[in-house]
Length: 611
Image 1 (spheres, one colour):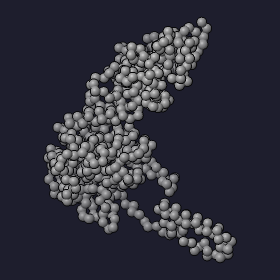
Image 2 (cartoon, one colour):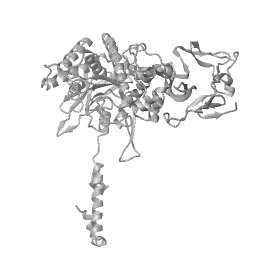
Image 3 (tube, one colour):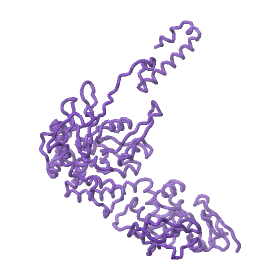
Image 4 (cartoon, one colour):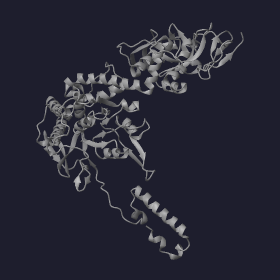
């Protein structure tokens, strides 16, 4: 529709041809549509003096801690809310905590939208359950509507209870339900999610902005269905999940309407996620306490949830709220299960330890939870092993051990039926990638590429090639623990063809102590004039076993090592082969044979000297 103001001045209008006038009108309509897309009222844009409706600036929240005393928002009627708290050993209600008022639910068509699930004022009338009684009641409820293994049932129960105490810790893992269509993951997500601490109902179709802003408004547990995000670590929601496992890591974005203004989101909170496939980003996978779903064989399982379900879940939310109020002072957020001796990776320990605070109330559940963590470690390793990184790592190991055969063109590098070295060309040939791509991925997994001397069939002299190597036993153990899958319980020894030129056997660190040195300081041979510098009097003494011998702590009375002492032993010089032509198997590198007069530099370049 033509803007009347464009035609009000007939003299102005007569200055333009019909085509020019039509173009002006089109630009005007485009500008109006753009303003509407930015949620800016077009009338306000046309008339800047138009007043906007004032917004509610009262501080509101649904949960608050005051001197470690919790206040939980509860529903007191349709669209009415209050805070429940413990006073003089009894549950009482107040309408305001300091300056904070309850956070109302959004209203749609005149009725509150149950976007966030919360307890109600009947929390005052329920009977306090003992930990064992609450566990049994939750288990009976879950088994009525979901089909899981006993260990998975227990994990769900532990996580439900943990979310109500999660404000006491600084790290949280996420509960993930993984399974294909028809395996019950959405049902399990609803039945478990409805009992979480202020469940915030989301879906994978929700935008990042919607999820993040809703979580900022309501303190709770996002329940995200169909969370199959096609993307890696650069995806916005993936970043949000990766940051949200630890308190104090904020997500900052510029306001699209005003780039000078930043929106700050706090992603820290427990989360429950349902999805069909594992995340492409291994960092996200490492933040998940995962349950693999299976199609139920229980014919008594209701296909549709009965009407009584909502009543049951509301009663359980009240039970959980009362349990948290009564036991809050009995749970120490810093007192966690010691997992030092459990054979799982540090990240999984970091996720499991915060959840273990509930075992202060539930000691008998600790052993079962540790059993779950060990099983989860194996699952994470399987997921990594099937990733691109894991595929390359296992290809290198299987080539080195002879589990898979070399491509025919590399048979000449075999010595006693095993390859003398594992080269980028071999891995590229088997994996279908390029040598450069494979090397880049394997470098992030712990492998190094260095020049290696090896035997070649048909030649009287040895040949040097670029080969994958492992620098020490610690790196080898880390590679195995993260990516290697085997039916054997024992850890395989590193094959000789993967050992680096200066391979070290690092056993363990036995002791780290802080000491004050009253007299002369300890010598640090790493830097300074002639390779010597002095550390402050307060030093850290590390005793480690390397090559079956302890590291030496030097004082000024000892003879410090000089640069000459660190020179590696001389190797026989190398010369280019007279009778071997480059075969193209190792990119642009040529083979070299041992002969006097020629050596290789640090980067493998030829250094010619006199004989």
